[in-house]
Length: 185
Image 1 (cartoon, one colour):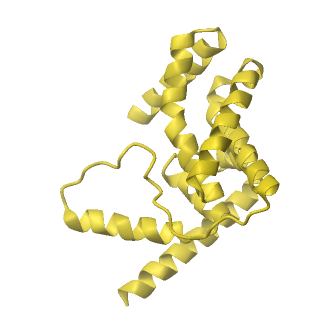
Image 2: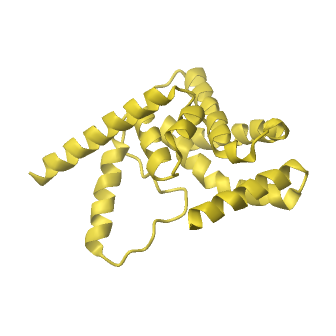
């Protein structure tokens, strides 16, 4: 229920920003900036380049916001813009995305503070394993589980067919499971 309220509020912010409401636009940027930074970091593997890509993506988002017909499509549409900016950044630099482990939660809201030290340790292990995945699988997994986007929204956001998203999720889940089960043996 709370997730529905969040979506409705964000749709309201998009609609208000579309009418020129600067306060709504500021709130929209404030709410989405950390999410876009995390996504760009997952795709690019470099915090500084991710910040640059997100900054450029915001310019594209602001220019195109008036052409967005369905405010409910904002998340997938905006993630798609961020993804494309990241891909341009990768292509222009001709660098390979680092596959080194990164902290997926470093630039955004903190996870719920559960009291159990065991829970925190297990979450840390899972996040470390996810960080070792290839960038496309890591991004798909994070958009699905952390950002709670649907397969269709992830397909739009990453500019690939829904079947490709499903395949990436399947392979990512298998790799995470295999690594975690290997550590438990």
